[in-house]
Length: 317
Image 1 (tube, one colour):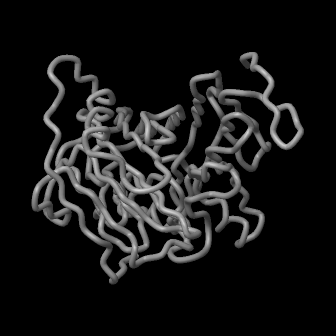
Image 2 (cartoon, rainbow, N blue to C red):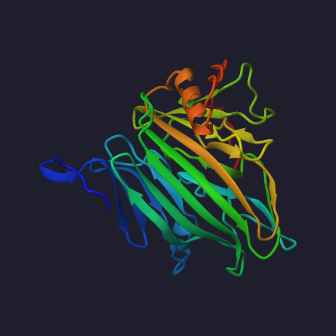
């Protein structure tokens, strides 16, 4: 680990900058100046049906600015399988069968070990090896999941780069499903106020049910009488014909694609999440960070016209 200068919070000396604390076999916390900013839920316990339901997939919680409670959803509540920042597909084709690693029926996504964890004054990084099991607990997919957490351009508070290396084990794997039940997605906490959820798209007259390959999509929601804004950025090297499911009033949104991974081959994907307290920051701030994300080195990309829509009342599992 790295040395830190002391900071006094509630009469206690705490580390400044980013740090990591592991609650063994349960979760790993990323701290900033002694406050929790993220919590990686990696426990897997099949000793009872209830405990298995609680731990059948790893995911990343995001916390409020005070580090007091998550602004993302855990197990239970409205659609229990929606959890924090998470990944999955509901129709994975493998050896002639279809597997659901979204609702998590007939198998789990299991954290196996940490390949690396480190932190310093600028950020923290977690590298987790997971196995996506079939019904016999045999790996179909080996995933190396990397979550890099750092400061974000103001007025955003936090930047989370989420990457996954998905390797097909023993046979071809076809990642299939639909925008409502697959991909890399974000789910706000269960207590969100549905009628106050809004989405922003980097296109005039956007229609997320038909449009493809948005560079980013944003959401603002109300939780515990406060507003929070989240942007998910789609890297330019991710698979094309990506659709964003971004219209549910309870706030689950994210990027979906289908893709064939041949046996022994690896698919690499990368997304960025920006977290702000309050209303959505200006479009030019978002676009500049997307340029940084994808490595635009010459003329900045034009600031796009936008569409803002509210969440719709109907829901779909």
